[in-house]
Amino acid sequence: MNTLLSAILGELAGRSFSFLIDRCYSKLPLLSNEEKIQRLERMLHRLAAAIEEADGRRILNHGMLRHINILRQDMYRGYYILDSFRFPEAHEEEIMSENNDKVSYSLALSKFNSAKRARIPIGTRRHGDRGELEQVIDNLEIAMADMVEFFLLLNNYPSIHRQPYNSYLFMDKCMFGRQMEMEHIINFLLRPEPPNTLSVDNLGVLPIIGPAKVGKSTLVKHVCGDERVCNHFSRILFLTEGDFREEKSLLTLRDSGEIRHMHTSSSVSSGGERLLVIIELAEDVADDKWTMMCASLRSCISAGSKIIITSRLEKIAKLGTTQPLRLKFLSREAYWYFFKVLAFGSSDPKEHPELASVSMMMFNVYFDHELYKNFTGPFMDLNIMASLIQATFYEGNWLSLHAHTRSYFLLRRGLGDDFELKTKCVPIPKKNTVVQQYCVISDYCRVGVAHEEDQKVPKIDMQDVLSGRVAPDGRFDVVLWRSHLPPYYSYIYSCEIHEYRPVLATCKMELRQKRKKIRLN
Figure 1 (cartoon, helix red, strand yellow):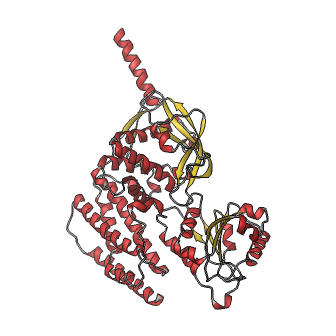
Figure 2 (spheres, rainbow, N blue to C red):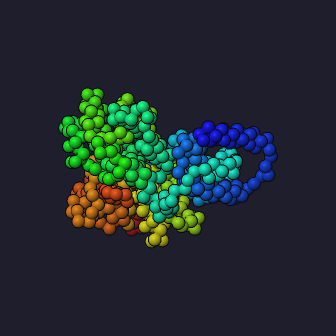
Figure 3 (cartoon, rainbow, N blue to C red):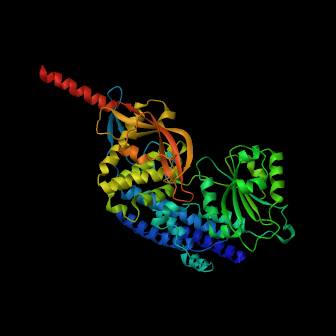
């Protein structure tokens, strides 16, 4: 089966190259930008339908998973380009500098940081640029060549009888953009051991390596919630490096540690349990402690038990019995697709072009300034931004969203060269243009259980602060994000509100005072 699939995928690749060569030598009729946009939109609808069909299949072949992932990235890229052309840019704002010189800041697609954009330099584009649309359309035509064979391959895989995760109602409850990684981990966990290695001395260990806030722990939690994984293992146990320092035995940890799942199955032998052990390591672990841990594990489990290690450190790759899974941040185009669905839901952004334009401007500001490296990470941050857009959508006042982003630029200028402080601040829009406020968010995060009866979890969330509904004095705790997945954690940060006088507001006030004096004279 794998040989047949590899042959078919190779044939598809060959035809795609042939299609590209024919495309280069063929002359297409000249189309206007509007016609190209409509053509791109139709192609994206067809590609999205193909990917949705693939997501409804249980696919185990790695080559097929990679091919689907490439199609998915092309779809994200296409929608990002489509929306950047479809929504008009916001007008530029003029901000006074300290020397009363006017400085122009674009509040739409950023133009100053084009090198950090993925694949296509959107930040350098101008309205009406034909080359960009043609390049994207050409790439999609290549990706969609021989789609009939693609659907024939999909029909060989069984359907997944459950609600598709990519629907609007479930977008915030699934692991967006990590379908290939999830299937890779699940295949490792469910993979039967070779007949000659059915022994607890051959524990499968998968290291997962990636930078902070990339979603390593979240990915593992989604995997552990999969029905196939829950039915395969009798227990799912979570450990940290603290358990290694305390030198607990697994027999103790099995009963007193953090157990995320328990399942009684007749397939589990009476001699031990088939365990899945998740270990989160913030630091490197000594070889002797790791050996001790594995020895303790072998004493109370059955064959087929597996270990997953998550860490930022490349050193943990040596602990694995298979190649490590390395996670990277998703592309900007993928995050835009995720953000747009969260912000607008089933509504068509074309029906609200002003709000969509300002939303895309906020999104690009977030990535141009690399704010995802300083707050909670793209997924949580974009959820917060989307809820702000939804509140604006229901109020019907998109100008308030525009004012919020304009306040961000004013705040950055007012804070001078203190980059570390800039990246931890969120402006709070106020009607008083003379005195503005901003919220400083600390680096430290504590996690609480989001139960109403739990008095330790604060009631204030970030939307309360940004909307001005609450104005606490001094330092206070705020819930930056509430998870929609069990066990429904709340991510709590310490904050403090400060005041500042924007340069523009100060200049305007001085001008008004001068004019008033002139009139009196």
